[in-house]
Structures are given as C-alpha cells and as structure tokens.
Image (cartoon, rainbow, N blue to C red; front, side, top):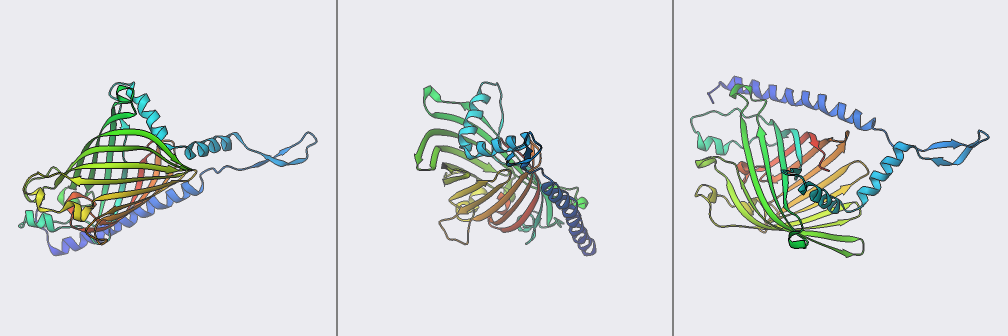
Length: 338
C-alpha cells in the first residue's frame, strides 16, 4: 500500500460515506417494497348456490400452502435438520449449510481498527474505509449418522468469513481480514421433553479458528466445546460453552481470547410465519464489559434467498479485532438454510 496525501484520504472518506448512502438507498427501499408487497394469506368469502355470500370464508390454495408451512415451522426444526442429514449421508460428498451464508454491506460506526496493521507495517499508510463488504460461507458434512445403531452421529464443518474493503479502490480493494474455522463434533440425539420444552440433542466438539496471517497479524486459537439445543414451539435456543486448549504460536498467545470474545454464548431465535429474529450473547467470566451482542432479522423473498440485517456490538467480530470493541450494522442477503 502506498502513501497518499491527507487531502486524498479525506476525499476518500467522504466518497465512502456517499457510497454507503447509495447502497442503503438502492438496497433498503427495494427490499422494503418487496416485503410489503409479499402476498399474504387472505380469506375470500365463498358464494353459495343462490349467489349469496356465506359467512364461512374459504381459504385459497396459496393460503393453505402457507398455513402448512406455518404448522411445519412449529415442529422441531432440529428434528427436521437431522432428517435432512440422514438423507444427505446417502449421497456421496454431500455438503449442507451450517451457519449463515450471506453477503452484506457493513458500516462500522466506530471505524476500522487500524492499530494491528500500523504496528505490523509502521511505514505504510492505510486508507481502510468504515464501509466494507462482508460475506460468510459455511457448510457441514455428515460423516457418520447413528453410529453403531446408536443416537450418536459424527459431523465435520468449515466456516469462512471475509471482510473485504471493496470501497478502498486506491489500495486495490484489499481483504482486511479472513477467518477460517474448521470443526468436528459428535452429536447425541436424546429428545427429552419437559412439558412443551424439548431438548433434542447435545454436541461435543473441537474447533480451530485462525486468520491465516503471520507474525504481528497472526490470530488463532483452539477450543473444546459443549453445545446443548432446546426448542419450544417457534422458539429455539442453544447454550454453548468452551475451553481454550493450550499451545499455539507465540504471536497467537499474546491475546486473551476467552476474556474478550467470551467463555460461551447463548443463542435465541424466534421463527415467525415468514420471518426469523435472532439474538446471540457471547458472555465472558471476566465481566459484563467483555463479550458481544448480535441481533439479526431475516425476511425470505424467494425459496432460496432472504433479506438479512444484523447488528453487532462488542469484542471479536473478527479475530484481528479480538481486543477491539466493534459497533457494526450490516445489511444484505442470506441464503436460506433449510
């Protein structure tokens, strides 16, 4: 990255804001109009043989389909996913969605964390913008389902999350950060019930997360985790706790990942007839001032795509920001998982 004048940098910041406002105007309004125009289930009065309107309304075929989808969503989503996994295992090299797969435009209200880059390259000037493109690709592979006719299954997964400075045209639109996270876990399906509350399964897993960088920009850690799942009608919950494994490079061990990112996370989701709302709280045993909050909202507008909004506040939005508190709003599109 070459050095640029202060005037050029200021112009770039203004241009970045204009680009972001342009993206908002071009993205938000069409999506809102699309949501408002989404066909809702309507009751149409039926006519009797004499041409009189009957008091009992009939439901059109489209409404019946939507009603069936609503009833289906009230059932255990986790049980439905397990059924999909069993079917996928019959196909060779089957890949399934794992976490969210999305492309969003993000705005960082408190700016980009430049400190790691300035420390690594003190002679360079960085023109990173407060607006960037984020995308995540995440998939899992069911390796063994119902091992030895038991309720235990083995899975593998990989998640890639990238932070692309697409508006930084002067520095050739670099990738500011990319995080890689392969995982493997055992899933135990026990399907307990307490009234309307269901506890379908629990995971025991291993996760490695790193950014693939070197020297001062290197970040990475390894974890063992336990994750329990619950659902109650349209509500779904998961509680995940982990313990960091010792080892790693000297550069990676400079950071206290558990203190800032947290020792676990609580995930809560509610499925409306069409929309989904989620809240994730990553908690740290070192105090409420650490960890993070994530809220997201999903509105499907086709069988495969949804309008997606997310707000993040806290530490560890990316590994390069492990000790930097981010305040980020993102908006874009997500691939529907199931």
